[in-house]
Length: 423
Ligand code: AMP
Ligand code: GLY
Image: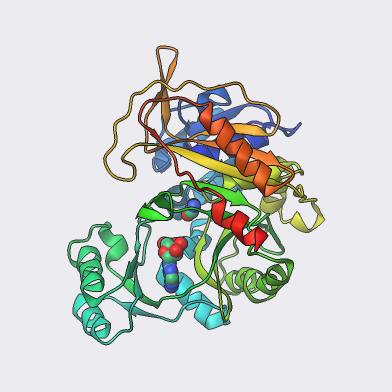
């Protein structure tokens, strides 16, 4: 089967490397891909948001299957367009991708169907939001309704900070139309867990749980980023909590989407907080997480292409989805300065990798036979091992063998998880 993969980060590199293990996998095109992915697929410079461009490419090449992973094209209806063309897809249609595309939609869905989440209020008027915030308890959370590159949630410690967030979003429109509606949300506490799941709209099969490290600096300091590293499984996510999540969150969400006429097929990502009052949904994503995918897929023992086809065809209940009992860690090497200003164009030297090690490239370009840095997050050094401690050690040992100027990594990916395991 010839496959079209849309996207161009470390997540897509992990997806492609895992698809290639399938006997059914034929040729792979990646739009746009990147200089590192080019070692594993034909990268074609069509942006993931260029819906017409991707559709024209698919019309010409006639792939047998397409995998759409980034949020923007999913919310823009790329799967609808490709399916119309006769290309079966892994990924939700636009009417289901809204579960990530609009936080107001997902809040209303959770309220209507009794799915546990933070209390919240919706505002379309800045003055009304501000007068509500004057009497709120702090900290509180201000969120833009729409997609905002993962930067749309502000934890405000004071009224002043909340006021700035409201003005940024609603008046100065720093996220464009995404901020024309906002949510003011109760501040929750507890460990965070990411659970990616496969669903065909009938059954939902959670993947191994994971833990992201969103802050830029060691010790959870600095700005929020797209993610500086991940581990799997997440030690806070016990079997008991998993069973509770299945009953109170995962199945109710899939059923709720069906009841709304918005059947979700693809990867449904549950961002959870394990609060003293039980697990609650912080956010839904309509796609694989980045860099969660980089630790989850190396632990998948089943054939990813078979599983993706089953999600598309409604046969997931009859398909094996098995994960290894081991652990994985991904340490992101970023360009110094990320998520703010940083320099690129430095040559990357990659070591040989051994069994259980993977280097997933996120931001690199190929020029004159050389691989050069080309983004904030450059790559993820990933390793699997029988235990989390060994996985973390192996991932750091691999990261230490990778060289490029201006490289920055956190020193404590997995530290909190290991502490929790030993507690
Ligand atoms: P989101 O964009 O909704 O994924 O939020 C980004 C991050 O903000 C989450 O991963 C949490 O760490 C934090 N966050 C979001 N909502 C809340 C909340 N209600 N209470 C506490 N922290 C939150
Ligand atoms: N790592 C979080 C996300 O992909 O949204």
